[in-house]
Amino acid sequence: MNSNQPSTSAHDVIVIGSGAAGLTAALALAQDHKVLVLAKGTLTGGSTAWAQGGIAAVLDAGDTFENHIRDTMVAGAGLNRRETVEYVIERAPHAIERLMALGVPFNTEGSNADKALHLTREGGHSHRRIVHVDDATGWAVQSALLQAAQANPNITLLPGRACIDLITGRHEKRYSGSGRVWGAYALDEATGRVETHVARATVLATGGAGRVYQFSTAPRGATGDGIAMAWRAGARVSNMEMMQFHPTCLYNLEVKNFLITEAVRGEGGQLKHPVTGNRFMPEYDERLELAPRDIVARAIDDQIKRFGLDYVHLDISHQPPEFVKEHFPTIHEKLLSLGIDMTREPIPVVPAQHYTCGGVLIDLAGRTDLPGLYAAGECTESGLHGANRLASNSLLECFVFGEAAAADILDRWDAFDEPPPINPWDESRVTDSDEEVVIKQNWTEIRRFMWNYVGIVRTTKRLERAQHRIAMLNHEVEEYYSNFRVATDLIELRNLLQSAELIVSSALKRHESRGLHYTLDYPAMLAEPRDTVLVP
Ligand code: FAD
Ligand code: SIN
Image 1 (cartoon, rainbow, N blue to C red):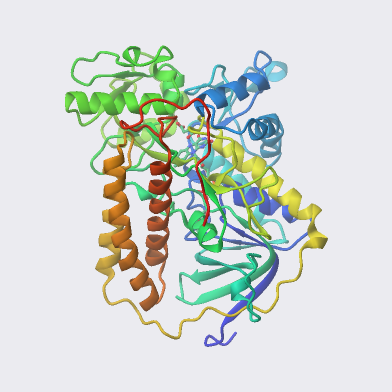
Image 2 (cartoon, rainbow, N blue to C red):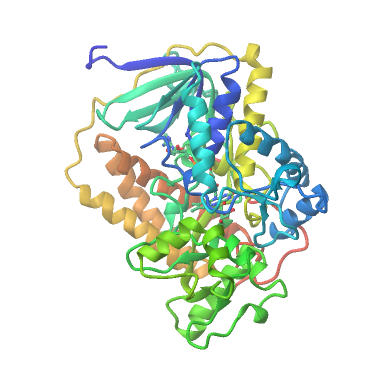
């Protein structure tokens, strides 16, 4: 192709994102159709590859779907949609079977005839029900899905593509006000050119917005791109105030986002005051270290603030060293490289942002408000997590909704029209940025005020301060965006700011404390759970 020509490519379906949700959808769609998978950066750059603990599923004879449903809704403080919770949980065992068929080597116990999947336990779960691959489940899942996608002749994987915006009716050559989605404009990160990718259906699977916070376990690319793109295109988003903080991220001045899996507490790890060595969870909840995440994170935050601490201790050194090494080989090795031997001493930990419970509103078939646009995984609000996600329910959500979105597209295929002619990306009025420092400064500023003003414990005054700053930055970023050629950092900054705005607006609308949204101005929980739905 002539490099000066606008580049347009047409496909049956476009999937944006190559994590658990995107690749699950792509593999199911590829039975019948040609699928293009676009991914920012590398194909393994999303959160999926970093998941540690595992995947929740009812697989033990003593456990029931009803137990898992109840645990999910207790953790979610009743904001979950029961229909969704049932839908996902009942499909969990089948999702695990599919992953095993793809070759995911889940840990087992027993031998020969007695051999069964090893189930670990995490906070908020009343039973052992987490299947895992040591303490690096995500990497095993990501590798198996990617291998299957690479081997599938109907799937084209295009890494290094940062999608900028969804293509809708207003980008058609014959302008239409329709919100019908026809694909996406994507920046080729290697050449700096913007490509036009069109398709009959598009699946958003772009992950969360964790990087909106200064401290987060999420990878660098978790900047809420899909949520912001869908919002700009006209889709509703829901419950964005429900940002989950994981209680135990390693406290280390150099390694800032290394997670210490909840399974450490599931296997007996205890939280202790670092000076007195006393366990403090008995002060906060009868479920102790295995209370749901929001409660444990708030307890740690309280200890840190009350005693002026930098961190608290997570201690599993009372377990036999072989047990610790066998269950947590990746964490053990990583900590040893930093001079901490978890078999003999406690681990310094702090809470950090971990998961985006809110997102693009979808129904049980993964459909968004916009015709032709589906979504799955962490970028969505499906009704599963409510006000606080139960540990290890999110990979599960990716598999179930990746599959559901694909099934609905396959079912309705004949109703999806061919894309009309689309305008190419217009770059005629922009030049290269002359002040990269603006982007860096704004990234840092957003992440810092979000951490300080919109964190684990909130107040209306702090939320309003954040809102004020967002308004000022909006003006600056939009001006920058209109004048300079797009680059990944700039695309992400715009989306990060949009995500921050959605989080703060949602938080200001909720006049109660429920699950992850805890505000000193409205400490009580209202009788009726109600979603915070924002309409563009
Ligand atoms: P991701 O896996 O995040 O993938 C997003 C994809 O979208 C990537 O390919 C990215 O490149 C692409 N993308 C983003 N923006 C763009 C753009 N503009 N253009 C093109 N592509 C784009 N959950 C569990 O259930 N169990 C666990 O044990 C667990 N452990 C976790 C540990 C850590 C450290 C973290 C951070 C999360 C953990 N989670 C866990 C949560 C879980 O990993 C995620 O919710 C899940 O993997 C999200 O999958 P996804 O497919 O929705 O998105
Ligand atoms: C963890 O391993 O603690 C993370 C599990 C999750 O986020 O679901």
